[in-house]
Image 1 (cartoon, rainbow, N blue to C red):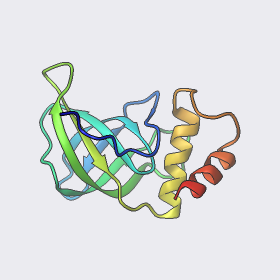
Image 2: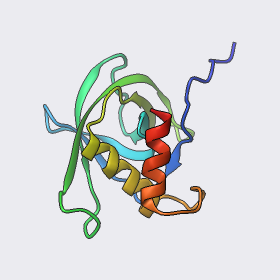
Image 3: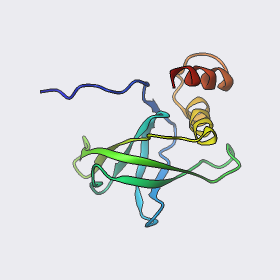
Image 4: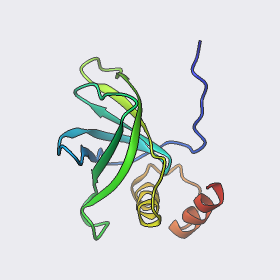
Length: 133
């Protein structure tokens, strides 16, 4: 039976595969595949334990942000083989983002996402996101 789709925001793919680390251990968990303000998917060389809260540190691309990293909590919901069997895909839910983290993710999507985002400014994207909360 197919799993019911619970995602309310369209996944956004970026032009960079940003590194995502477990901030507690320092281990590289994988590279960002897509994200929204509610969750993300990473690809990695090893399976990530599911149903676990992680404190994550995502590298931010140089030249776009004052900070080098974004820190946030996320719960791993699933982990499965990628289309390439040498890799694993893992889905995370992000239950809470503070205002600055939310703005950073929206800026990532707006400035570094593939251009299927609605036309308009970053401010418009932030306002539309605020309405969906």
